[in-house]
Amino acid sequence: MAATDTPATLSVFRTLITGSHILHHHGVSRILDAYGHLSVRHPDKKNMFLMPRNTAPALLSSKVDIVEYRMEDASPVDPNSPQGYVERYIHSEIYKRYPEIQSVIHSHSPAVLPFTITAVDLRPCVHMGGFLGNRVPKFDIAEIYSEEDVRDLLIRNQRLGQRLSACFSQGREESYNPVVLMRGHGFTVAGASIEESVFRAIYTAENARIQTASLNLQLAAGTAPLKHGESLYYLDDTELLAATQMTQWSVMRPWNLWVREVEANGLYNNNA
Ligand SMILES: [Zn+2]
Image (cartoon, rainbow, N blue to C red; front, side):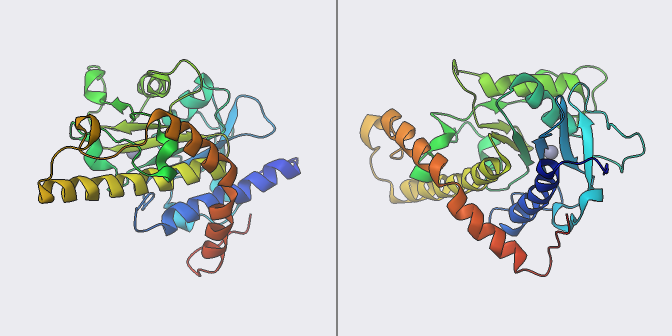
């Protein structure tokens, strides 16, 4: 990295690596296994973002693992940079479209995948999932493939990235949807900081696991639908708002615990 990196940038390098380790460490939800990625808007350079090189997130360990990209076309600023993730267009197109978004995570979490391939909507059913909003939008890449596209479900170019990023404003007049599901592939989450996007990724997977378990229980018990004909008690609009506010101010509590967990685990090194 450049000798001119400011203290803000140096701090972001470290947080980006720690955040990647935390997402891997949450093995229950498998937010990031050997795949998936976390990025952050550059703190000092307009129209740039920072993202790890193409490697398993658990193995990131220093500044040389972080690559600076142009928001415009997801190209690396240094042409000699280490190889990047092919799906970095997910990140570039979200930053371009939503100036308020500072950090993006893309994950293949198996806890969330069932909601991408069934008609069941992922919905907030516990207070820690209130930020999800009423229903999480679903993106089906099959609807927008062109003749040239490789049909492997990956976001391999700007056009696919643009269409995915548009889903973050689907059904919203103000703000943005923090999470978008991707059919047969995973999900993408956005936040106002690395800490917030990590928090949201982890609790998206937790909410998904709880919702799946509850739907199974309800089905096995064969009991009547609950109020409003729903299978489960989901959070109502007033609860969504209050729960979202609660998690916004409490993000740092779990974050500080998660940081200590990865610092205490010999698998993870962070020399940034
Ligand atoms: Zn992917």
